[in-house]
Image (cartoon, rainbow, N blue to C red; front, side, top):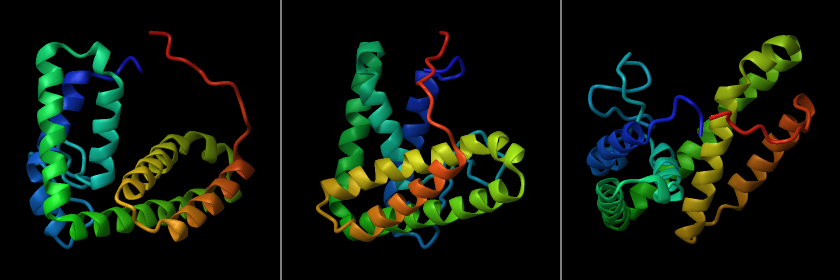
Length: 178
């Protein structure tokens, strides 16, 4: 993980997201707010989306061996609460995932336009696009687990990946120095 990643922060953010999830999935906004945060609020909490939450839960689960007993217990509780909302509000939950995947993939079109106009800028603004595409990958997994037809989103992701391969070069994976 990076030097700036903090398990406690990820757990706090996941907690706030889970607490707001039932209200959020029934709302008509794609980006929700938690704990006074949100994408445009200037707060310290990230925007609430189902994709952002499932990505956090997956990351924390992958790091389970590094969690304290208390943190593992908190993660298990958060996962149960998330699963309960997903089950109770499945139609809304699924709709938000589909909307988010399409929105994130559509947003990447601006990145490709910028890359065509200024390749140097492309390298400087690449990281948010990686997060967008990674979140879409998590969304596809979540939708697949719900047995949702993801054919259209997968095709859109494949077209996006093809465009991405035109502006990046393959390289070996770089591990954090930590």
